[in-house]
Length: 236
Image (cartoon, rainbow, N blue to C red; front, side, top):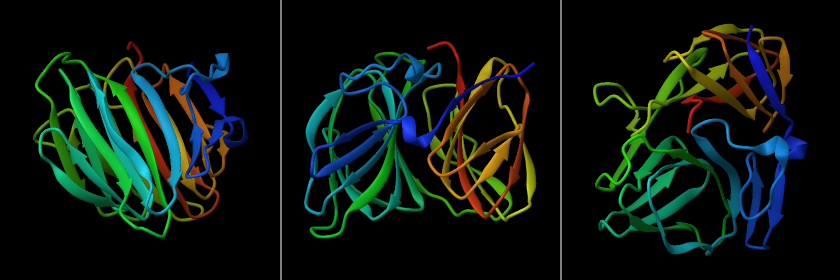
């Protein structure tokens, strides 16, 4: 029988620094909630809004897969590998920090806020050479679109972890099944907009549902909905 953990949007860890309004689905920033521990290799899922002209200055990471997923607006990226890029809604970026990389992520606009998710996964290739990848994707109505995978021949940015990320965009009333990609993985669903029922659990915007011990998730849209599915190993 499938096991689940439900994270209502209203119980996310909230931090407002003025220029940064952050909602955290898992423990981060020195705050600990026993109900908000990491979901296997999925360590961080932050929902951040950054004011115009502000952002995160240059700082370093090691041995994490750091995925940036804009929802509205655009981010300016710079890193110690020499990459300079702008990433916006409809694109996904990953940094495999590996043996070490420094980067900055700042609002590309001097006036309008930028809204984005930042997702951290542990790596399955510790101390590998750091690398960077960024790709655009187009939602396909009533389908799951893959935006990240561990396999070079598959669509989406490449991950150094046996993890897959999909975006599902469904019309109201549409039912769709998601097949878990790897035995032993769990799936963390995060609703970006609208309402959906997953295996009988109703979810609204920014709710999260972790499911494991199952091979298939059954989704039915209660309204037009967009949902992010993070298919990840449960052993970090």
